[in-house]
Amino acid sequence: MMQITPATYQRSTYFALMALIGIIVTGAAVRLTNSGLGCDDWPNCNSEKLIDVSSAHAAIEQVNRLLTGIVVIAVALAVLGSYLRAPRRRDLVWWSWSLVVGVFANAFLGAITVWVDLHPYAVQGHLLLSMALIAAGATLVRRSAEPDGVPRERATSTRATRLIRVLAVGVTVAVVTGTVVTGAGPHAGDENAVRLNVDIPSIARVHGASVVISLLVALSLVVVIRGSLDDRHRVQAGLSRWLTVAVLQAVVGYVQYFTGVPELLVLAHVAGASVLYVVTTQLLLDTTRPAVEMAR
Image (tube, rainbow, N blue to C red; front, side):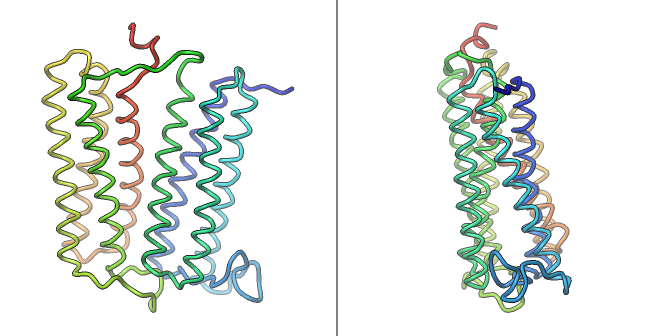
């Protein structure tokens, strides 16, 4: 039976993660160009054609659906690779199959989103499930790089672990409130799509507050790890990445809000949210490490 090396398998997990991020960005592009109903049926583009590029909106939506196919291939390769990897590991098989379940659930939710004419609740669910998939994909990437047959142990102090968990919750709240802002905002995906009946400035302030609180938690974590050489050794790199991405994301968010949410900045903000969820997941994973690494 054909076998692949751990290094080859890890490359396939990176491909899957990049594909999952890419589909979020292209999905945002569909919404920002009002192409959400460029294809008003599923899986056909419309009642007459499977593929229709007769209009710009239809062509943009078709590109996004094509990338969904790439995601399916990438995830399928991750699953197949988890069985061909030598040695085979149960955790990698499990995490790769979680991507399959999530991708098919999201495809079904995407179809529902089209059938309900881009109702904001469906759009929100579509994005939030995509973020959960990114977290699973980032976990698979990290786990695939770890040594085989070694149990995981707690790697950080209790204070640092708690702060990192709070930080992860804060980022999740920021993402959720961000989808509410989007659901009430001007970029609906179609000129006639329903919008959430909420006050945009109010929910934007809630979203902004969740971002500020997350940054304050991260700064508290900086102080905590300074007092522990072990924490600093195991968390500092991940925390530095998180702070870099989070600050850039906050800047883009505030600039887009005060400049009338231009499409390119909104697209950058969506891409930034995806990357932020990756580095948040990685930071959360830093709280435990394989026992062999703990001895270093």
